[in-house]
Image (cartoon, rainbow, N blue to C red; front, top):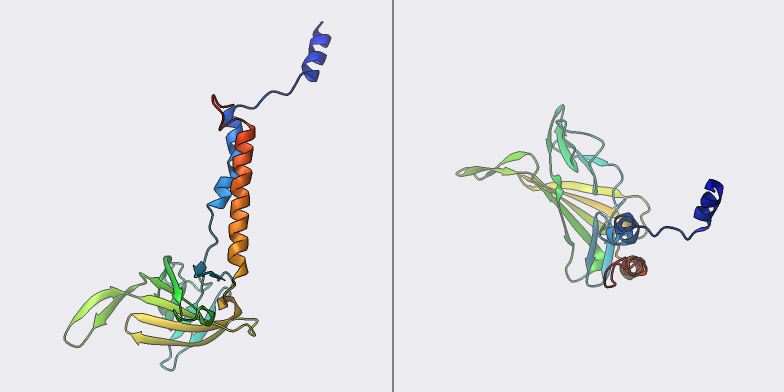
Length: 214
């Protein structure tokens, strides 16, 4: 009898998973759809995917003898004061971090022509004194990466570094990654829509949207 019961159990219809068991399967596409690509920017149908716009780091030395290390979408390999940063300024062994990656903001180089490239600005770098001879106050350093579009450039090139003010650093980088794409945007939206549709279909098949649930 025990053998017959075992055989009967093995031939019975599979057990229907509970709602708790189905949640990870049914809603994985919804979770994936919320994950945005890092360092991406979109304006009026022009899409910029800036991952890899700058390699692990680029470096340059100014005429005044300062050494700069910069990156675009992550910390540089060269670490200043034990704190990862997207950019740092060095003289000898002393250094200052130029910006916090968490403060990243993006804008067009030219609002009238997206094909020229993109600015990436980072704020809340190390403390900095700013002002005039009469008034001085405490501020924080900032770093702006002016990424210039050049489709003929295979590897990013650091054109130069300037300091318009005591606390502001601007680095100009020429890269093909700063050139916009009009097709990637729609492809990305299509992927998101397909993922959402797949999640909704899976949830419906297992009764999540039906009266009484599964």
